[in-house]
Image (cartoon, rainbow, N blue to C red; front, side, top):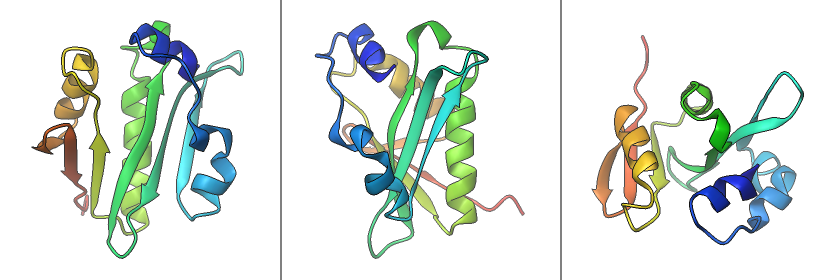
Length: 133
């Protein structure tokens, strides 16, 4: 699924090392990784996060949705799940690094802006996770 997503973006499709070892990179480190599964038990999306050592911040990683499943709320559901979990576990801010050039990543830039993220440096976005209380 990730290879297909990268191919659609015109990137050289290859699997990142963290995706080959989710257990060690995310889960054993105390962080989390989620999969969106369709009715046929196929992965159609994913997202993970890692904590920033010594802070209450986190970094979002690998938010992908299969190309033919985009605009169905899967990305939003994954993001909201990750943000809710991070808040429950004491995270107060979440960062994301977006690719360049902006024209190639226009969907990501629009998606994160729609969900309350703001660019604080070129390609680096942040959202303050506020309490719902």
